[in-house]
Length: 241
Image (cartoon, rainbow, N blue to C red; front, side, top):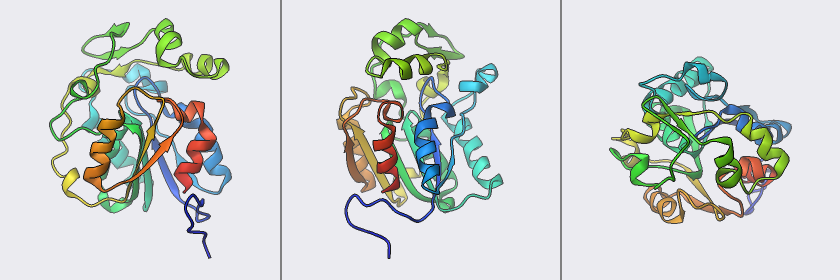
């Protein structure tokens, strides 16, 4: 019989789809994915259009809806069901749009220090981000100096440099365009929100608001905005609970 006590890790194999946030790619979930796979789970870490190793494909027109459409197609073509769909930062918006599109394939949603706007709301209405080194109608992103001094400052130096080598611009319209979620908050979900206590954005207030609307389980992690890099074992444990 499975252990259902608080904090118990499920021994039943699951299918996880882990979605990254701004400036990252599927690579950013590497440490967490390795732990979950070692426990017998199937784990997919797709890189969103225009990001990571797909940086050469960045172009005007990529937005939350188009990235979510790709992930919805991935779930269909890979014949994936009963999925634990996880998103961090802006990946939370993609999670919501994917779930709205193919709800029958989702068993659980997990938002890890994630953004989740109202229908018709954009990122800039939630988070007042400092100026970036690169920003135009196609893509935006920080410089290596900004990453070291601010964005990734709290990481172990070896992990930080490993990540800096892989950071890319993020499609601008993901940040500047209002997200269309006309049905998401009217649907019922099994959801978990994991707030990272050391993170400044998107902030506790925002995450508690949408957790309340979703009737989501609330959890906390003593980590910054990139727990998949700074605390992969702790985050993997949370995801497997």
